[in-house]
Amino acid sequence: MSAFDLIVIGAGPGGYVCAIRASQLGLKVAIVEKRATFGGTCLNVGCIPSKAMLHASELYEEAGHHFAAMGIDVKPKLDLAKMLAFKDEGVKGNVDGVAFLLRKNKVDHFHGTGRIKAPGKVEVTFINGEKQDVDAKSIVIATGSAVAKLPGIDIDEEAIVSSTGALSLPRVPKRLLVIGAGVIGLELGSVWRRLGSQVTVVEFLDRVLPGTDGEVAKQLHRLLGKQGMTFKLGHKVTAVKKNGAAQSVTIEPSNGGDKETLEADVVLVAIGRVPFTDGLGLAEAGVKLDNRGRVIVDAHYQSSVPGIYAIGDVIDGPMLAHKAEDEGIAVAELLAGQAGHVNYNVIPNVVYTAPEVASVGKSEEELKAAGVAYKVGKFPFTANGRAKSNRATDGFVKVLADAATDRVLGVHIIGANASEMIAEGAVLMEFGGSAEDLARTCHAHPTLTEAVKEAALAVDKRAIHF
Ligand code: FAD
Ligand code: NAI
Picture 1 (cartoon, protein in one colour):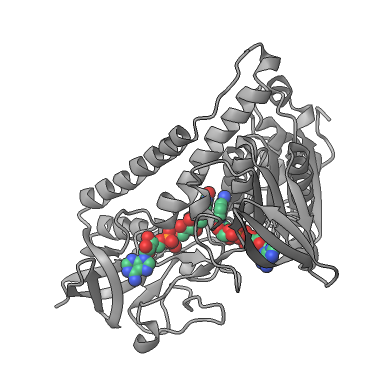
Picture 2 (cartoon, rainbow, N blue to C red; picture 1 turned 30 degrees about the vertical axis):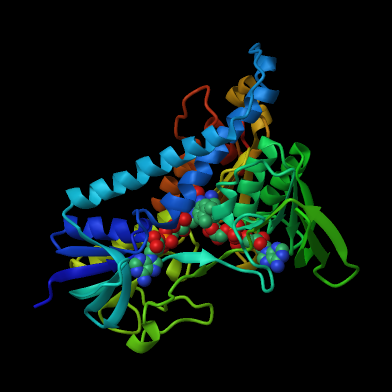
């Protein structure tokens, strides 16, 4: 007899949500986490602290540059130590919340490192070196991801940092060089630019935010440039050398060409993340990985070994907290005999820059590549009443609908509060809704969401306010 029905390895958004859902469904569940706190990358060193710093730094910039126009005369003074403490408090509130939820749902927890000895058997090594075997009918691997490294460039989390170090810099660097114009580079680059750094972003490709709708990415690139961020697109970093207190960064065009040296005080490496399976004993257990190190799973999240499942950043798909959570729920429901399922066509994606970028469904580039005939409805925030009165007119909403059926295939928003507005597109798409459905839904006035309705009207060339 196994002690548990399920043991989950890793207590990030995938793992802890899976454990709670499985327990709700009557399974006896344990979770193993090697970090001192629950919540994984997302709550400890990812989503939550980065959003706290983005929020605080955005208000700092607003107060310094935009309050005066509204008749508020203030001169903000940065207390970085306090801002970092504000961020840490947000993290603590969240990780403590997860500990509470696990207790409330009667999930047993082991603070230690898990290793799969065999199907149904996990060995936990505690911090003091002691070991314990835990038996369970099923094992879910939810060990997440780690920072991708650049060969020859050592991350010391002081002068050369990953996102983790960039969330806790004790001083505002005069010059910050960011490697990678992906989501981390643009979010954390924005934080430090707002706080006073000169930020240069070096990106291998000739565009920012690969994978995002091209028109949206182009607009964001232009707006971040206007805010003072410098971009070196189509360039790669080949070396970072210490030069006294500064760092000498050698870059060269991605397609070959002359080298150039840039000086920076801090270098942020943000070139992606890689699945994390170190020390899990997967090779010995016979669990197969793909050529990028991700655990291969079937449609029910089962690995190549029966009884061993995997979810979240450690498997294929976007590395997003809500995708990990939904997979956690799906696998728990499948283990309880229900029909767990994730709709991968409707996973929203948000970049929390100012303005924010949010999308769900297909981009124009993806639809073109798939040969799908589509209609475009676009509406700019310059023509939205609320955006005008708030002086937040940067950006637009774009709705992409199937040319034949009018079914919405993608919604792309660049603008203030895009992160909240995208949920409307996700709900519509989950129900297979059309642009006509969206256009006929009454939207409160004055709200930014009226731009979403107008973009849906524009699919049929009948926007009212533009
Ligand atoms: P993780 O959150 O990585 O959790 C895995 C856990 O497993 C970790 O706690 C780890 O300690 C533990 N673990 C690993 N191996 C073992 C072992 N052998 N034994 C015991 N425990 C183990 N996503 C969003 O959706 N929105 C955002 O705004 C966002 N912002 C981000 C900002 C940053 C700076 C970063 C780095 C990431 C961000 N992400 C964001 C991505 C998000 O954090 C991940 O997609 C998400 O955390 C993945 O969840 P997970 O449960 O798969 O893995
Ligand atoms: P990313 O994959 O978003 O971007 C990495 C960028 O680095 C790409 O543009 C890539 O072309 C570039 N690059 C790669 N190698 C390079 C090189 N040698 N020189 C210059 N540029 C190079 O990865 P990022 O930003 O590190 O984020 C990792 C993951 O974390 C993301 O995939 C995302 O899923 C998740 N995340 C999500 C957030 C959100 O949802 N708001 C916020 C932060 C992270």
